[in-house]
Length: 379
Image (cartoon, rainbow, N blue to C red):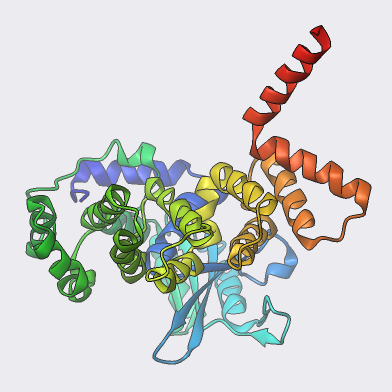
């Protein structure tokens, strides 16, 4: 937990004063809304067609049986009386202007619009901004608000977090202590009671570090017993506490979920949980493990078809379409994998594409083949 000390606030403010808009989006905005249970619905390029919407977030609300959409206007620019009118117009336009659905079946409207700024708002602009927008469905977050969010949630780039003073044992809540102590005592019966029942009612009362410990425990338990029966409870708990996947280092665990799902011998008792977890995995999560995920998809597309392969490859398709694969080699390979999956290649194209994917997926086999070819030439 980040301590609310003056020196911590100063370091966060220094970071916010220097960060550019795109980095602010990647390091703070997307992780923050992801922490609240939202997925990125669309990221718009900076152009006249964005209508004040840099990013559109989406979250399914079970009670209403529909999605909630939030349009976010992101800035890294001081707001003063000179530009507050321009920004207020952008925020109003973001709220009022409809946007096309990804399915292409009609237009959608944001439920809320948020202005999120890494920089300061002058005193006058701070007063004028909400008056100019004049809507309870529009929210304005200035630098001081963002600073407070970082302190509360611990969401920030690692290089900033490493500088901040934290207090874990002295500041944890009673609920945090209950969860951590139960896990550390390592009594399986008590832990099962916690994860099967008690923790469901404590989700909103525990901190990020405690949630990380829960996910680490579940994964560690699964690694100790990946048999059919040993997979059931970890998959059930991953499904039940999926929103606890906040830390980037834990996104790698999700690759194991895909591997279990597409295994030739999966745990059938765990299958409903495994498939549910896989469906919840977002492109933003996968963007942190693109290297491993694209290699995994390459191996899958060359393997005997599995009924869940399409689910995995649709994740790759979304990842590629939303431009979340930053390395050119991986992006090009993702295109080849998807093209190969569509099975619309002629014979010469098929062999060429297959060989490229094969060399990417199994580089060690390529080296073995080269050595064998050299040996044959010497004979």
